[in-house]
Length: 397
Image (cartoon, rainbow, N blue to C red; front, top):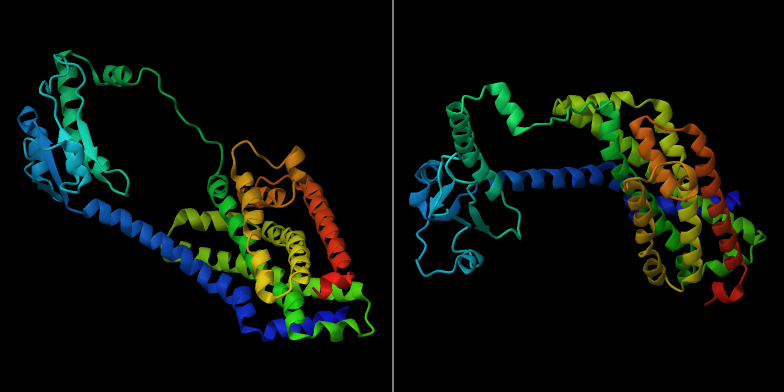
């Protein structure tokens, strides 16, 4: 078994494509991709705030103060709308970015009229900041009108607050910063790590089964004086090592880049969050991936042995991404906690445990269900893999 393992491991190390997915992808490309998405997202939001918006106002004479505020603000360009134009069609055809319709009975005296209803016509199919930018101009006027109305009614500031919000709910969040950030980050970490573990094992798995069939080296291996069970275990361990290596590098990469980003950008929340995670929790995050990698390895090897060619094996393995995504999505749903039945659901329990470890609220007794269920599933899949390998009609399809 160990001779097969070492032989396959050497071939994996020599394969540049496999090493790329195992080491370079999680170490460098992962933070570059995440950073790129964050950069372009922030850039899109910034561009939406600074973009010059073409607009038209219906009945501008009814709200002269608001009309003047919009006209004098930077980033707004007034367009004259034809009297017979259909507002909806005019906006849809990109003649303007938005049209603001002011009612004829608009008044800045709320004691004399009901609430003013302005109609904003804009195309909401794409990302824009039209509504938020208009609100920044409308809110100061509304606040001034509100204060003047209260002053005329001789209402004190305390009474104003009570009238605006008769019942106030004060939030006292007992969760610390680590729990708050961990609730958000935990699900994402499990998603990324699971995908990379699967991706790290796909290339070597496809080569160790279907690849050997194509090269004609499988027959040579089968006539060697090595028990087939040991051949399967040797190949299985090779795929598992590839997956575990990818997982380990991913965890280290995330920790390093998290520290660099936190210190480089002086983000105190990130620094506190990373500082609160102890080495035991990080070690458990890694060790819990071992049975997960075992499930992936056994499943990938089974598909590779069954496939006729390397390309066919990759076709079988591609849909497995959904097999990984669904359990992680379940772990992020509200109401699903690491307790009861969920502690025994493979993959989902590991994703939940990773989130709890990152939050610092892990119930370590649940590790029994986590390791137990994943070990059982991995053992069954490995047994199925051995069953495949003992069938001549499968090996020589």
